[in-house]
Length: 286
Image (cartoon, rainbow, N blue to C red):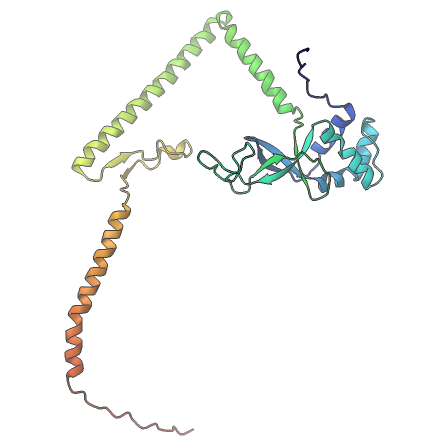
């Protein structure tokens, strides 16, 4: 018995690639979803069919002969079916990440996944239907000019690093000064971190609860906001137990105050009260 031969994924046809490239250029109001831990673009079938039956598609067919003709809704559905048949876009459905662990089971064995508001977690459906209300996700990622520029930039930087010994002496001296300056900044940052820690420990003993120099230095803020304000008092978090004890003490003081005020109220109620007759109503002259 011969060993099974691994099959490579099917190669997309030129017509399917042309349709995918056209739909990628249209405004399908895509939203971001999570599929198997990766972010993908999600779109609705009715928007893709509407784009295939638009004037933009008719104009695009005049420039690209690979685009199949579309005359009605049925032909648009037939053209759209080229995407799932060539694995360029597949139908997905929304799932609950807390109820599914990603392996098809209804329970999770670890910490439940954190749900992000407005971001769907989806899975691929085996039945690839093409109704207007269904959702598809893109697997076709066209190469953009930004990616091309970044790839060329990486190659140029690698060549410059490899050819460093051939640089002119002035450029190599400038790079050396620049590297020394960067090392100096890193050392200054380390010294400042050690100094602010020592300052906090000293002020914790002398001026409780302590003073932090540059309190936002390690916070998730911008570069300039990391050095604002210059200093701040250390924030002490109130424990829940302390808060409950304080609330119980406040209730006890209220009860004791009510008990102490009760005898005085009874004494005042036992004292004779004078009756005051209300004045008779008068009618003003009009």
